[in-house]
Image: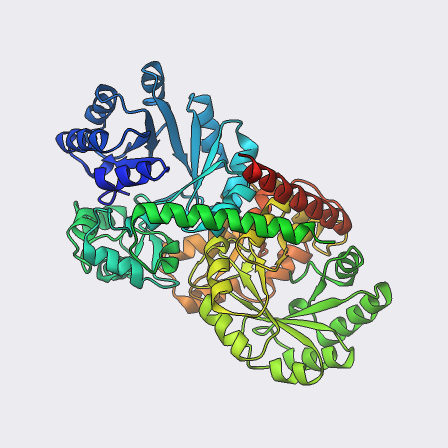
Amino acid sequence: MIWCSGWRLAAAVSNAGGLGTLGAGSMYPEVLREHLAKLKAATDKPFAVNLPLLYPDMEAHVQTCLDFKVPIVITSAGSPRTYTQRFKEAGVTVMHVVSSAAFARKSQEAGVDAVIAEGFEAGGHNGREETTTLVLIPAVCDAVTIPVVAAGGIADGRGMAAALALGADAVQLGSRFAATVESSAHPAFKAEILAAQEGSTQLTLKELAPVRLLKNAFYQEIQAAYAQGADAAQLAALLGRGRAKRGMFEGDLLEGELEIGQVAQQILDLPTAGEIIERIHTQCLQTLQGLHQRVAKP
Amino acid sequence: MIWCSGWRLAAAVSNAGGLGTLGAGSMYPEVLREHLAKLKAATDKPFAVNLPLLYPDMEAHVQTCLDFKVPIVITSAGSPRTYTQRFKEAGVTVMHVVSSAAFARKSQEAGVDAVIAEGFEAGGHNGREETTTLVLIPAVCDAVTIPVVAAGGIADGRGMAAALALGADAVQLGSRFAATVESSAHPAFKAEILAAQEGSTQLTLKELAPVRLLKNAFYQEIQAAYAQGADAAQLAALLGRGRAKRGMFEGDLLEGELEIGQVAQQILDLPTAGEIIERIHTQCLQTLQGLHQRVAKP
């Protein structure tokens, strides 16, 4: 959710009863401080900061989270051992994003409070095993005793109900909130999410860090490089720096990196974040009640 | 389920209350007739025959299904237009396997009675869009009015409950039944399914027909061919003929093609097919009742 989830979206989600999350991966240290100040002014509900450990400035971001007494930190794309103890000693709740049961076990051993298990269909950076959410969630639930949050492929109440059936304690939605009024994504990228259909996204750049993105002109350039037998160094050179900002924040639909999940095909409107939470909650309850009635019948 | 689902497995599933299915793709015409004769002697319950249209002998198989008054035919890996009318005129119920909502719509237009929507995590042949079951099922349910059967990634009652939550009317299990007493898979392949872990399978040979298989020595040869820049013709030559039989039926774990779903990581024992159905039914009901109690709480 880099470039999409700033203080406006996080505040809207938290005020509506969800756990609003700042995506710090795309922020310079001073930008994160500014967003945290505005977020704390805009909500008195719990919120989280997501720290993708492969991005720069993590030391500064960790200190910022401690300074601002951030109640919940989500770490991802790195080892749960790196910062968990430091956060726990300061009373911060820590969740770590995993793509396998093996990594979920390691995260529990590292002392995190919960894991977010994210499947192959999720947008952005993703696991190498390509395990889908449907297969991943039961495996993670069997592997750990701490709470499990399901992520990847969930954008409505049916998906939430399915995740709960698989054993998850909660769900995390990224793509759905990227296409809201409060998302800081560029309007052109939001429109592209709404236009996405089945097969519009692909997991690629597996030789670097696997990432799911929309198949735009930049994606076709990656494909052309593969066809030429490009190695990891050549792919890294093609990717360069700043592609995600260019695509998702600046709206360059051709040459930018447009990270979004498969579930974009289900996303057809641009409501407020609060409306999303209301819809999902209502549909999830209706789904579970409907199923109960169906199985209760003789 | 080629090489795994002969008359013994189909009869066991039907007798236990499921819809037992003969996998005709791996059978010569006289073999299908023999299996049908034995299956009809072993059960008086409904059963189905799966016809993957990309395999040879389909004309003969279709006539055999009509001759034996097969009640339900499942067509896959081809157009739903090819045989649906012929079967419908003979009173046969037809289901078609799809990997996208677009193909589900076409199947409904072709007059099939139901679609089986199979996600990326499924074993064997698979769709090019790579849409996972969690994303695919709601999309297909929104696209058609006929019943939807969910397939891919389901091996227990949690997965079945999740599929129902997504809107499916029923579930189809392949991998789970491949590892049963009655499965005709080679014992060495069954043991390999039990040994599978996360990341043990991969969707590959996308330039031919995408297929998910275990990462054995043959898979490593495919990877080596890719690294050398192999084209579709070279990949087809490497694949050759009879690899699936060699692996799944004859137990050549090194050079055979071992088709199985991601959910193999969840499969840890070799029970009877009847026990599988009993377990899944019980766990699905428990899951749905547990969820209902959870949401009914204040």
